[in-house]
Image (cartoon, rainbow, N blue to C red; front, side):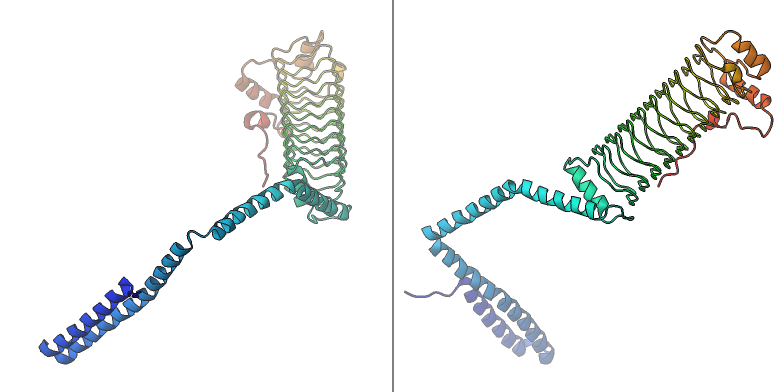
Length: 395
């Protein structure tokens, strides 16, 4: 059998012979032999380098092609290929079957982090641990992270019933639609936290710092919010049935359409609060400050208003059915009583003639009258009515 040279090798040799002949011809015909010889040598060198870079690869490619063709029919190699595919399939099945084991291991490690750092300040990896448990829908009922620093923790839809979060820093945390029933948040920092749609029934938020927190449509039945700081908080549509907000600061908060029946709000600070359309039936508002608040269309049926200050408040279209201790109201200067419903006998005349209240249908006209009726520097009655709630200073 005659071994033939590869095509690329043969072509490379022929090109080299052609280059050498061209160099000899140039030496014989060029009028400047030194210059033409140098150019020819450079050209020859470049072609030589190019050929010797290409030829080895071409040779290897040719050998590999012949080898692949020779081995193509081997059954042994086909078996090895099938075994490799089978190994991949086994690895995938094993990974799927052991998913629960890996999850249990992750959950055990997460709980270990939480339990080992119990009672300690700082983070200690608890944010990641709690978020990992919540991602896998693991209940954290009764968890104790007292005094921990958990700012910005993301726990939407979490189950934290009876959780111990006393004095815990949870600023900007996300508890949207979470279950925090009976949770302990006494003196907790929940500034700018998101509790929209959350369940906080019977939760203890006493003395908590909840400035600008979001509680829209949350359920807070019988929750304890006494002495809490809720300046500028959003509680629109919240359920506060029988909740305790005594001595609570709700200045410039919004509680539009809130359910506040039988609420205890003694000495509550609700200056400039928006309560439009709220239900505050059978409530105890004794000595509360509601100056400059929007109480239009509020239902105050059977509510005790002894000592309440309503300086420059808007009570238009409010329901005053069976209003209790109304003669003990502290102030009604500049308050708008236009269209009030079911007012007690003699209330309107007493409020207008004795207390300085007004009855005006047009909002702009009421603002002008109220500003004239209230003594200068006593209270900016219309600031909230004109500009709305304070700016949310959340980072």
